[in-house]
Picture 1 (cartoon, rainbow, N blue to C red):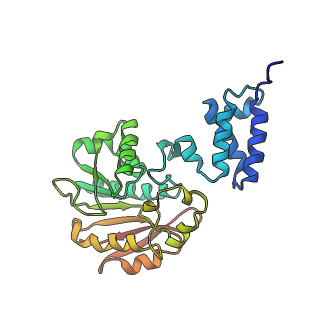
Picture 2 (cartoon, helix red, strand yellow):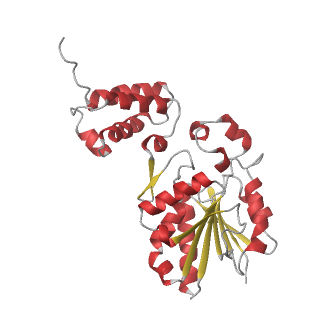
Picture 3 (cartoon, rainbow, N blue to C red):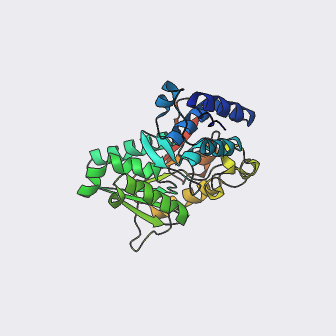
Length: 295
């Protein structure tokens, strides 16, 4: 019996695209290219340039393609997400970092820089850190400042599994020692010496329960605790906003990622006396809310 012909990258891509399109993937070609690259251990650009190369493990690709056709996110299949030029380890313990969350990280960096520039020592606390992506970006941006003692960076989460994933991401980027990681429910005391933050950063669950129930796309695979914000998507946001006045330093700022159309509701939930501004994303959609209490 003659040996079977090797599976080639080009033909494997064609088959994968066909299967993913039939499965309803919104980006079948891109998905196929990323999965083939993952199986081979090469960059996507290499895959595109070498359609004649042999595919070493067709069965592994077939398994990943079937899982993607069933809706499992590419980031979970590959085990990482490229975000802000960083490779963030991802799995079902936490949300996949979204492009819109880069805006939250940018807003946090700008706020911390503003306070440091006027000579303040700063305590920044990310609530519901998940994979730790935002805290990782802050630790990499302000490493020397943290080491010098002018900035303390805290990250907490209600989920022990998410904290384990965040710890792994921080360690893989050599900044674990720069961050105080602890379990906490929103701004509940974390650790033996409860911190009093100047800057609070949070990407909380803000998806309405009914939408989570529909399990469209990645919502069927990501942890419900990180998605479900109650009937209107506002329950956890409301709880955090209600804690700010009692559990923060004077002149605090809270930066929140929100869902489209939630800015007005968040404005109404802000503590009395606070000013509220909205930072739109590149498409003009309300995405980050800045809540500030004047000194």
